Image (cartoon, rainbow, N blue to C red; front, side):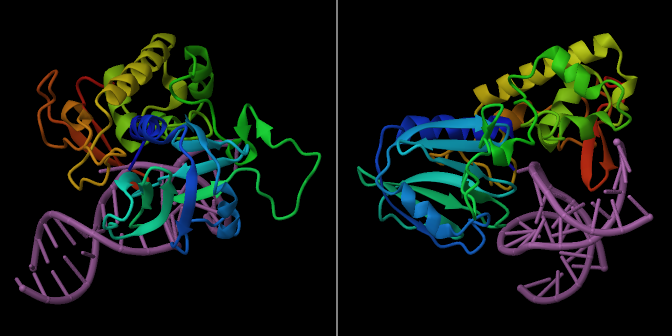
Length: 283
DNA sequence: CGATTATCCTGTGCGC
DNA sequence: TGCGCACAGGATAATC
């Protein structure tokens, strides 16, 4: 579910509610929640203060006073929810972080695709290897630049000359980190480009519009605190829905009239995913 | 090298 | 009502 705007909204909530607070205890109950190292390793965070919450693409990075970095990815159905300690826990609560001041942070994830792990935890220590690449933990070194920090020329370089469809390039986290199915479609709409256009077919002005659209769509979506779709799976850390779904131009609007030109919004299959676009506004 | 496909899961909504 | 099936915001490994 969550793409960059939703993850950024959660990040801000984490920073606001938990930065500066001491983690008293943590429980990991989900069998698949921590899979890159033994779940017990997370216990070393107990007693640490959350220094701050950061984000790269769709990954959250929680920095602790002991120097540890807890990486969180919500994948398809994960949520981080703040709650008073002891209040009833929702179904599929796989991890609970208990902070000083009787506040809990729950990791809830029905589909169990989401994960938590401590960055840099190795099965066997590798003394000389640098654990940070481009300022990121080694586990995230494969990610491209964050979609909000990518420059127009950097974006153009990732797309120019590529045969793959524009949407596949935009959602390839190795090229640009943070764009998923919803925002790829919305960015393509604002850029006036069909999602199936080969990257290499884009002209310089197309690439400029694309870079501008990427930024403006993501910024507007963050202002709206993300998109909460019909299944209500995305909620911010305090349980509030986002409102950017009301501003969607094409995503999920197949068969409806384009708000700009009145043409019928089309839905096509691109690989396993659907893509939505306006055949008149997007070429 | 690049594009499809299968996989990990649960929940929901649809057609019959 | 109830059943089976398709589909869902993601990422990655395998396969052609």
